[in-house]
Length: 201
Image (cartoon, rainbow, N blue to C red):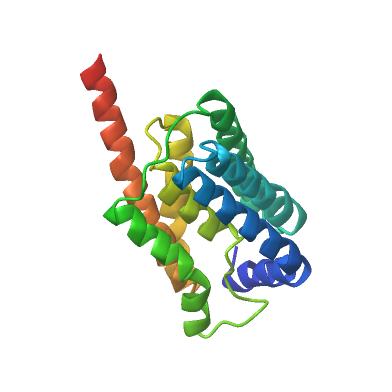
């Protein structure tokens, strides 16, 4: 997949879904706030599940043009979305802690994703917006790691995509360094979860 094909997919997606993206962003952020305030503890996981499924079905299945999008990214996002929905039901009473310093930084980085994209010389529709694969996984990692109970398979899958932020150099999408930072944080959290599991045993 070359850089032009990468940006063409983004352009077509943004041009035709920008209204849906705005609505989905508002609902996702509202759900996250409800969970942080412990009013609806499962809301963040549920809406992150919907957002990941949306990316899989719409961005990759409908607008994707390359094999890596269809056979790697599409199933990864569908599985992540499904696991988020499962976790929102299975651990619906799990508490989402207020973000720690690192999670606050990741949330801030998510917040400036489009700003960084514009600063790098991109413009709509060929720019990174909030409801796109890399920002959604970045947000998912930043929020989900605040829950006390973590699904290791979900954490691994999100981390794998986070580490694809290395493509920021290949496709001149330097804003995805944010994704890479989130992926590295995912590794740290996964190692910590494995350590805790061994201690319990």
